[in-house]
Length: 397
Ligand code: UDP
Image (cartoon, rainbow, N blue to C red):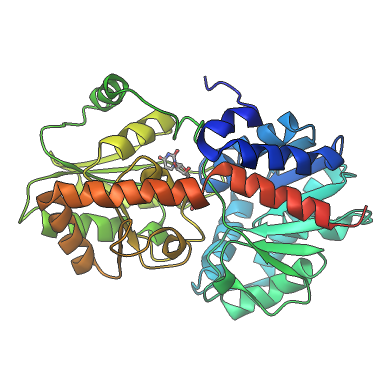
């Protein structure tokens, strides 16, 4: 199990000054009672973020809880369609979909007695909860989705729920929407002490790779993501197939399926025909394997088509990996093309960059060093903790 770290442990990465500032900001908020509500305890960046955030907030003396909306498969099928539509996909927005969504959220509201000092609702699944309470304290909608081009029909349906909130937090400025509610912008961040990110010895990396029979005789090209079309696993395989005609390598595609994502199993199955001696596709829930792969990879891909933020990018960058990311959404905030990684817009570009990095390991190391610095300066957990504290403090008592 992972040890539970208090804020002082973060001095090692973020410095004394930052930690003292966070402690000072937390002091006036002692004994406040805060709630985070989302739709899954595991799988996906939001659950990773909440796992660390809720523990650390409690260690700062702020009573912070985490609840999950429960629902039957058809509820999550509808909410995944909303998620896809918010990222720009088409949807047939029927009355039945709205009814399932609103009914299940209503049932959750009856079972959850919320009278916290601030309530954070993450993503669209629990969004309409707010309509079922006599509102006595601030409610914040924290949306982690890439809102570059939301489907207008779904957006217009959800907007009246969103506008009941006191604030909306979006990951990137480009996601700003036409809303009456104030919008705040900050990205998630990564926890250097989580299982995915903590330091790992070379022998522990070897052990994890051996456990899954991952060969290390050739350089590894890796993508870690939920099995989701937006992560473009097909594009990753095509880029790899092109690249390996020029340079020998092994592809490892590792993913998990979040409990709130009913499309994951199907996406995973659709990829299996590509499996082979040098194409390893694993559906597992193993943070230590993710950690090991990001450390050992010659190239890490995150070839997303849409990406709210993409914690896997910062996770790999933190480990000094050479990362090739899709030139979209939150990935653009993390990777500066040619400085701390590469941004690509097509399979061909991705293939070219893979070959370039396999041929020039020094380049990969240079980019990786810059990448680690970027994360230390901008995407460590202390930064996001401070932004949550600032937001909570901004509400009148
Ligand atoms: N992750 C994991 N195992 C997997 C795939 C992903 O532990 O097989 C973790 C990954 O390390 C990251 C999170 O799940 O912390 C995914 O977050 P990201 O923001 O990249 O994407 P999301 O799934 O939220 O769209």
